[in-house]
Length: 633
Image (cartoon, rainbow, N blue to C red; front, side, top):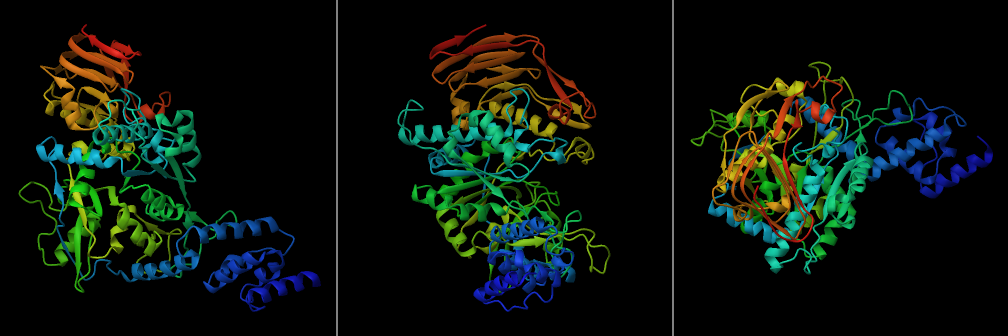
């Protein structure tokens, strides 16, 4: 090291008020101090104070790998700035959580579970319709946040999950379905609140839509949006927030793990979707929304093709019951592998309403004197409803809470230990956090509730690959691309039945080793039926749809009157085209053909379903001009 370099390093340390021998515990770092800026020296000091001197053990002498060393501090800077409270806070939390994990501490010690207050809805009854209307009224004061940091690898699909078709009758991908659903709510809310007859008749509402991405999904999400003109949404309505990863931990002392292939890089892994709260807070969006008069933030995940059928009524519940937090839920059977929404009351008087994982709920009930544990009541379901990870938060109290916490969510750690001594890990671990754990820090005065709807209406996630799904015990949900698509057709068929259409019963078929109910392949654009009342208004007379039929409605003002459908019918209509469809439509229709998920000649997005649609014959009508039309074959 030259005498000039020594002087400038000494000057820097002096200016920072750092003792010249601060790096004596890391001689290889000490040798390299001349390379570092004052900001990097401060980061180095922080790492040493956190007991992370091992990070510098393999550093080369100055002049070797110098760019890599600077790259190391760039990474440390990112890890430090993207975590609420910085890396020191992360390591401190990690040591506590790892100690608790090693000692087997029960996070629920001292808590007694009970059933919280919430709203249980029955699809299509008067209450449901009223809640839907209240929700539509509130929709123009809402912002939507899609958590989409994951790839489809677990599904056997190499793309981003939101690019996967939700169903193949129309080919609509999840992201398109979500955006078109938000636009349908935007339009319906304007019509209801302002009584506007035309969709562009002075309605200024633009519902904000945020997507949380990750390094894995960000570029591909941007590409999907841009190549499809944002699926009809104004680009300014859409904001992407990219989640950073967190440092991995090598041992119970929370020593940061070095990458095996690069001694100048710390191993990182995703922190979990709980990061969405800190990202929203630091982005400044919450304040912008609040100043613009918004009242609600709705969070949802990336592959539930039924979700928006449940949104209007749930938002209506939030508004009517004045819930600060409303968790969407479905009935769950006792011990079913889905978390239960539970009220926990501590011996010291603290209370919270949160999701308790199914494998923790039953032992917790038994440990607190409920000898039978998690059992079904007279309804045939557990009194603890099943959490589906869709949240509605009231914006004002949400901002208040995040101002206190910075958006930090209670974390957990799940190390895979080598043996029962719990002294070493099989591989590096990290802290994780979940979006639905937000209520854990709320005061007792917070109004936290839930809204339960039937699973057929609200919940059909796509998360399992064909092989895993085929091993699911009979009667349990497959949660695959196969079951997810069939669930959309079932829900649409049941909704039309409730609206008075005679929809034929399903048949049982097996695709990719999964036995599923195959209903008529009915699908529509969200703007055709954002609520049940709207769908009822568009169906009249004696309509009949056979089991082998397919019906795809792309248009807002399409009315079904005395329609008898046995085959495939596709209607495409522009905004101001009103179409009455009546009479008998008969053709050879579209047929589902089995395919093998191992057949590499078939596109992945079809392979993971186990079927493709053979479009033998259909009646397709396009209405590209405004006006009133009648389709009577």
